[in-house]
Amino acid sequence: MYIIDDEMIEVILSGSRLKAVYQGQKIDMIPVSRSAFRLDHWMVNLEDVAIEFFVNDPRNEDIMIVYMGDYFVCPRYPVVETVPILWEELTGAYDLYARTPSVYSDEDLMGTVEIKVKDGILMVSNGKYLKPISDTEIQIVGGIFDGETMIYDAETGSITWQNLIYRPKDKLSK
Image (cartoon, rainbow, N blue to C red; front, side):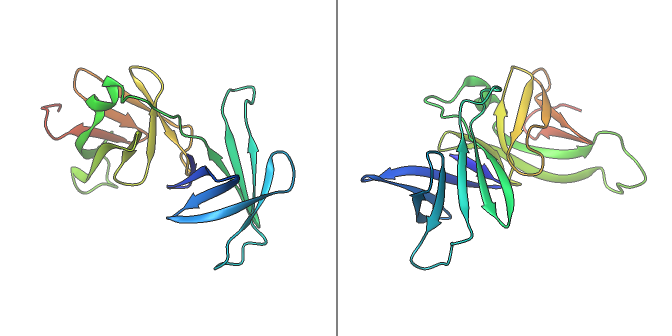
């Protein structure tokens, strides 16, 4: 699985051919080199779309680059055999509050999100994909916030990111 913005692309082997699965559509991947492919689908003109894989880079991060006039760097989401205990602790509904109240936020509660595990992927209902990298740090994977870190406080269950605090609805964490 690779993440492009707030969506997933799965690369599968179908028979003897590689296919990219995007929004439920299986798209043929035609090799043009050892690591690059052009895409082909009978319903859509994809002649200007290509993908290239960079695996085992020095940071040990596999990425796929999608070229469509511009290019999109798509990190690979790790395969999880069993859901880690920390992921289960993170799941649930959260209220969003400003980290530092200001004149720009006229409400205390800025919204609500849910963190859940679906098909071995930790995700937020607002489209972010998450990957815990320690007991206190959670990395955002893909999209415009790719690589940013959220901080988890196990005592309160709160998560801090940028100017927001995610407070779990089921715990008193004010």
